[in-house]
Length: 467
Image (cartoon, rainbow, N blue to C red; front, side):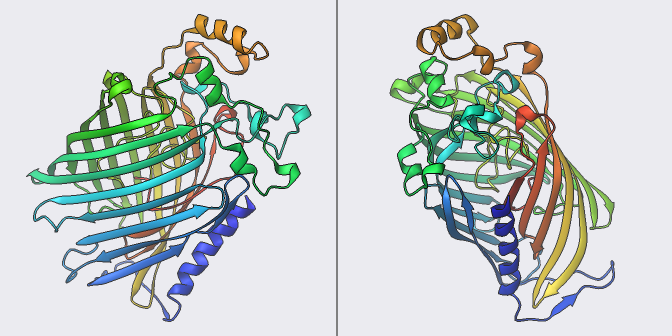
């Protein structure tokens, strides 16, 4: 927790120091006319953190906006976002994102190119609460080997993801839009590289290399198939429609955004069974309470598998028409259910909701840049709608044959009542925004059920609102 707090505080300080050459001009009066931005603006932050397993993280992110003559402000003409961060233990993100409504007249174009190596990707099994989470097995800070601790890498696997996406949006009529996109997802998956993670560690911090993680056990038990265990190459094409009446995009104070789209994901050769078609439905509503200062916002959505079969590693990926954040993973974690363990709910189909009260408590200027400070208490909810079908008898037989030391009750709860129980979390967010669009977000959240995580130190530092 201390390391997260240091990272957050350092990020805020550096952002303000960057603009400290100018005097602070506080905006007085709730009805003062909004100032207009023109030309180019630039926001940059360092990316500094430390993790016991992933090492020291260093890097930077930058967002460049072009407003032209200011006639479209707070909407920009062009946005360029670049982020690069890496750690001494092979975890990082490298991303370029471009967004414009004016490069192609009357059309919106977005392009994303990302490489996301993850040495310790979370894996907690299938079907949410039907897979038992044992905090004692991975929490070395609270438990010893004698008390049941296994390894911090027990609920992990290695995942490297390369993504390319290009999406175009055009107008059907007024607020109704059509959307078409193509993309490519390439997953490279393996067991955690324990030797790499142990390099340079003190003896008391060394991870055991003889304990199989849950991912390896799922492979042994034939729950994860041989043709999906190491990832694969999956080009996709998607299309759909959107309705958008929001007054602005970065943090709307009123309006509705809704979309419905289909994504066809291809697979080849040994993975040809994984051709599939998915449906996504999303609805967001922003309700003004007091001018531009207080608003109520909520989002409901679902992702459903319509045809074919989807490999487990793609079921972690939440499809979207507009890639605002680095990675949309669901359900669980900072991009879907804040406070819940990342990728806690792994299943074929799911539904979710995020509810927020958004407050702007202070508006001010630093030099020629316009800022505001905001807070947003929230509640997040997720449920399973399409399940993985367990073969309980087969799992028991394989476990008895290959892993007789394992107790099936430590891993599975096959009751239907555990399957459809909602996963709920709540928390508080803080936002610092520059020129309405560059928004530094810090969220803290906790789960309602210990099966979704036993920690109250879930901090997320990201760019932009969740929705």
